[in-house]
Length: 210
Image (tube, rainbow, N blue to C red; front, side, top):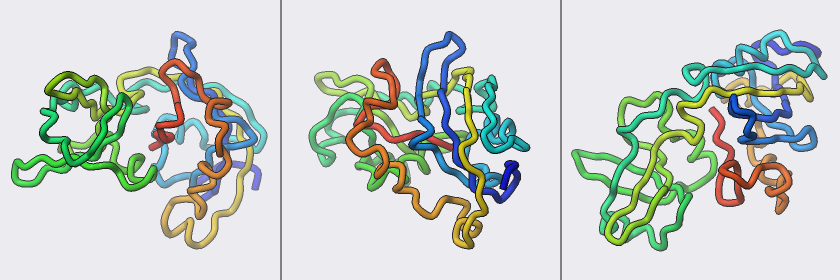
């Protein structure tokens, strides 16, 4: 298959930048990002820009925040008493916590998997359930942020189309690649080779795609 269209399995390499030119994320051709096109599983601005692109094509596209990771929401920044996090255990900056609200009772716990992190980020959600990142740790409280790390940012993607394939039956049914753990297997212990050290990906974080 040579052209990206709905219900194709697409592999891309990319460099993600802020409009200032600062690199936020890099995914090399050797370890591409794989998704099924047309299932709204990546940000809408990028999925639209990929329509009709050809195998091997390279392009750059600017994506405003409303077509990317949405506006930054102040209501998703919470000051949480440490007493609420006693069951979580040791806390550290950048730690990811999943929050549940039930009848005004708030509970935090660790996400079970990297997929759970990606699925539960607070993107365009009206409620406050989801994943929160520890931003500051004080004597009696912890500041957590439920915004996507790229929320409120206008972005530039420099993309290369690495592969276009026919998806399997299960991929068409689920809308996701069969082997979502390939990303973790491929990167192994070499995370630092692919992401910047100044606010981008690090070994304690997972790719935050939607």
